[in-house]
Length: 301
Ligand code: GUN
Image (tube, helix red, strand yellow):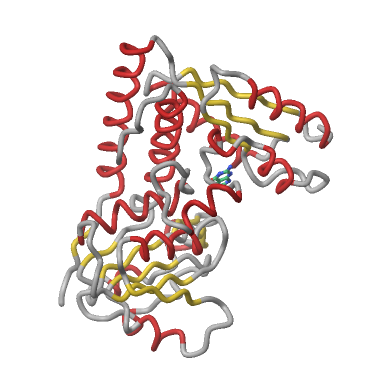
């Protein structure tokens, strides 16, 4: 099969953001409540500041009240815990996001688990992980990247994945595990593969839906892919690109994109695939939290 359908994550993200904007203005008209998002960042990692800045700008663009708390690198566990506790009690804050990674001296898990589950718009609290595992997708918050990847899967296959084999490469709490559970929830037959799996390429060749989240540039080759499969590439790897000039680099995914396009039925590019969906789903999770905290059923995305 030549030339896979290229799944446009920017376009899909823009549609989610339009729906979030509409839902935010409906909520404000009905209840006079402005959706509130608190974003907490500790230290001065430039990449984290870039991400957080983008999250805050997009939230404001959707009509949210977005507040960024920028704390110095030497913030103590107690100080950070106190801030989260006060945001938990603040009724005008519907979503709390603590940007990761935190400086090494801080216990990130203790902080994440101290966020009220209903305000945990990253979907990282064990209560939300448990709701996903037990199929309560209506009241649980789903981690943003797998939620976004799932919307891209649905843009090709719809909501019913019965009879389809899905393989997820990667088993992190942030992505691989929740992704596998979302696919299972839509009735796919799901395999989770990882760095200790044997004969990885023979496993992936059985996949109608192949999701790669390993963090190894262009690891998934054309002959790992079943002809006609849908390939979702979650990797974002920066590699040297001397062909672009000295010291230049470029972004590639976990899939060898050009050759994969010759075999796959549909594929997400990097950049422009799963990446843009992550912030869109953060905003979707936040508006859903705001609706629920006002006793309204949350809009679906
Ligand atoms: N750092 C990189 N990605 C993420 C994310 O999705 N959420 C949080 N909180 N931190 C991140």
